[in-house]
Length: 606
Image (cartoon, rainbow, N blue to C red):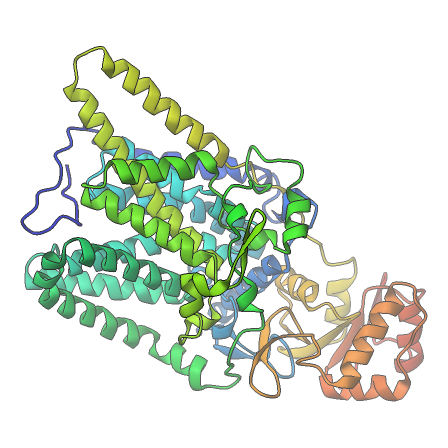
């Protein structure tokens, strides 16, 4: 049995006589893979044409999915032409462009999946990414739990709980970069090996530091925010360890310093250029386009099941509406039985160092996940200044983090509490030979079942991805555009345009888009909003959208002309046809289209 990495250098980990399972190293991850395929089963009849939906399908496909699809295509196209993707590009949000380091661009997964994207399309890559997120996250936690001293069966439980947790299930509906969470447990594990002095000789310390630096760099190019969350979680775990065993941490300072320094140097070497582009390059930003202060779990979120759970109430949509929350940010749920069980296990096994650290870290992470705003508990309100995140939110970097996402890592700590406590209980039961053994066994199994059933995930709901309208590719080809030429699709809906461009692979630049870019003052803002558009562009956008929906409110030719000159497109396309009100307006302004096929009309301007 592996020795706990949290044990003090002179303190042996509790002896666990769990059954040996030599094939668990490959059998358990294989089961996770099958479970992930089963959970995403509705994608596989048409992996190139279907994507997950939010709120059991009633809200449709999130624009975040379209952004990820576009990113996969963008990276694959760059590699196809023999170079890495540029980090600042005008292929999106033309003519201003976008800094991909400030957007969810999942650069590393996109590079790894580039062959699949080029062969089968970016939507197939998305489906594979979803399966890898579930199964990979579970397998990583399984491995870490084994290293922390858990038996194969208990570690399998930990991996399943983390990889298929309610937070992971919600993230899978739109936030692929958060659901691909297999590196955070590994990063924290390696950091703990250094801090506790368990890395061994100086050569092993340096090797552990190298591995840690590589994993940090990899996570940086998957999702920077999840890396920040991982650092927060790691600091909490180390602080709890230091308070519990200060002497052990002091003894490990020398090796920890050398290993962490090695990791930092390597990570900066690998990420330095990208960080420089992000912080000092073109289109750098400050702040966040979201009202970060409003984010955070409400206490009732921890016990109100989201629609992605196998068991959930019919009033969940009303609950979201009344509480002003978004489903794609609903990460806190675990249910009353699980919360009670985790607290009881932490208290019951308080003298066990690993369980104590995991349990206390879970509680602290969930407290932080509530954010720094006022929260409601029944008829009472608690001011934000009472919550710990209130005092951290103005620190550099943390001010742009959505605190509710820390629940993803809190679920990892909860998984370890369950696994390690299950082993301790099993070990105690093996030593008993009286009548109490079957009673305790049945009671423990029933308590675990009651806690696990409410967090069982439901199969992913899916919907058909909007296909490019008939004639789209023929019209784009008929415009004879040079690679990278800017195309304005009216009415303006950058997310759908990004999806059409990604699915078809047309080598065009998208005017506008679903992304983040700096406003005139350099503050982060959403593209295609008043913060990034001129007044003429705003008026044109509003009125053409109204015109497309049947309201006969046209922009004046002067306003429309100024907007077109600000957008500077090489070509303009509409997919609504010449018989629509919008089509009539565009025909009146531009004249006969350069290319026309079915309801798609295109005008080449330059």
